[in-house]
Image 1 (cartoon, rainbow, N blue to C red):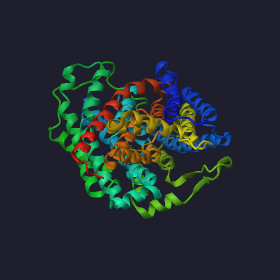
Image 2: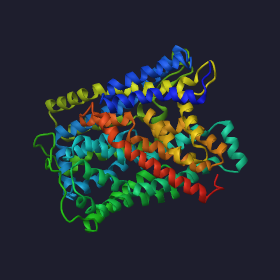
Image 3: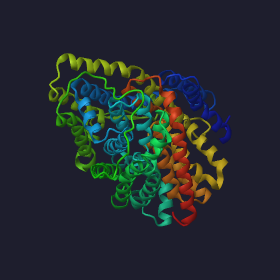
Length: 547
């Protein structure tokens, strides 16, 4: 028996609600909650969608393969952190960054800019894996470090990893004969629409909200660390200037260069601008803000290395990732060579490939081996770094494996004898039917939902761009603006998506605290999505004829 859109949406929400309920209400760690979420999705898929067992199993295996791809990134990032920890580099970096400002509020602003840089150049959880441990090494509490880097990892994400969420996610999703006809009939050239029209509106809306994101983070930092109103007011201007330092070059880059470089160039210029503002004393605070509990807490002994050596691993990984993604010739080599794939998994049409050279984790591990030489590390120091890494990744691996299995199982419920939509699409259609002409207010939350489930702005765009495009046409709304809100929502979902939360917790050694972090970041993500919806709705009213 075929399900209605309403009943399908209700049933489809159950696996998501199971995970949320277990993690938030009972503080169950993700490595226990995610398998139960996957199990509930599999049972629903079999009983109500009548999805064949081999398709459920094939979707699960695809999720495992994707998770393995992600785990290599996390493993490499965690191993680099512990290598730098044992080699003395974290102490040196902490001292250097602390030298720019001893004020915790300014340090948080610097984390915003640094995280944007790593998102622009690598994406895929890299900012959390690098900047989270860096904040923790400087003395920020672990949970607060995780929350901040996840909040910051939103505005830059839409143009992360050289713009993949836009040209790869939206572009790949809309390249069907049916949807391409809409562009042809409207006289809109598709590549121009992707690279400039869509990109510009994504950047404008992100830029407006992102300017105030460090200010929101400042408020939360003061609240979470027991500060006073004066501590917040005293650093409002530095926070807004930190926002503008990134969002202005970010938006300009989007207008001039397309989707590949806004986050990368925005962060590079942003770091330079903010450094000059600090040096010129334009950015300043009247008194230093310190956490009441501790001055600094770095998990290592007294070993130091030179400043140049300390920053060398980050410089190397940044250069490698930039060259493998920014230059078409090199990018083609890393994407097309050493590719392992599995076609027709378990007799289905499901396929998945693993591009070895395109995985940032491979380069993290390479830089780790070089770092052993750069820091002149002994066998015992190297062994300690590897042991600590493996211990931290064991529970994270389980969580990631079943989180991806859950998302893929929900997607492939589209394979059923009744030709029903998948759980994901039914949930989205249910939301659209309830919102009508006010859909633009809710459109970002479809993107957030997709990112929460799939753990990726790119995957969220792949899942929902076609649906958002069609819904906008049915409701008579601007397709450009609705798709912009989808892209933005998919970026905002990174604040709370299980994959990113687990990855950050793994790097910080706080596995089991995922529910706490999601609970803290839920309000900022809702606020960001709501602001995006309001701005998008205003633009729809102002530009009614925009494609």
